[in-house]
Image (tube, rainbow over all chains, first blue to last red; front, top):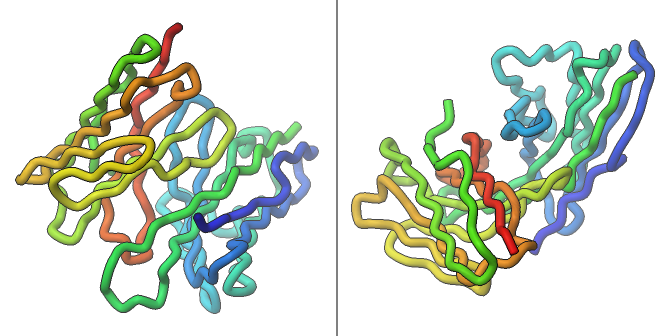
Length: 121
Length: 110
């Protein structure tokens, strides 16, 4: 199956610093990627939709100036947590649907990355 | 708002068949039903997907009644390694994001 990678797999940073998380589709192109956040014992919460060549779309309650998303190419989206605080500590997961470009036929399966564990001290 | 409702948790002994039912009363005509498995500190992993009737693959079966308002994931002869959270999701697969409900936490006991 298709592979989506994330880097780093875990990161520890000091409060006030910025952290960049990369999401790559390794064997397919993705004009759209999604970013989720998951707190312990909770479900995945959609944060934003990353669009190649245009601005990201953020879910209600997600600060776009704090969580900067850049979809630099058809295989790479980055999420930068700016001025991180301990409450931003979470598990961040990206996903990418494969099969984009089809104009309405079939189903585009979504592939998830392995996740990035962020701990802010 | 999640489109699906599942039991919060289930317990099973090794070797038993486990059936997890999901309600999706407002499923749209274009929506598919997809189940994912998630282990702690890992991203969700695709298990099975269907539109109607029955779908079977090497790891699970998915039963969907004619009205499509629910679906049942069947895991045959579970093992300890099947302990995970299972999510049922509906979506039209048109590059729209998947909205996760609370999922079902399956615990397999020896």
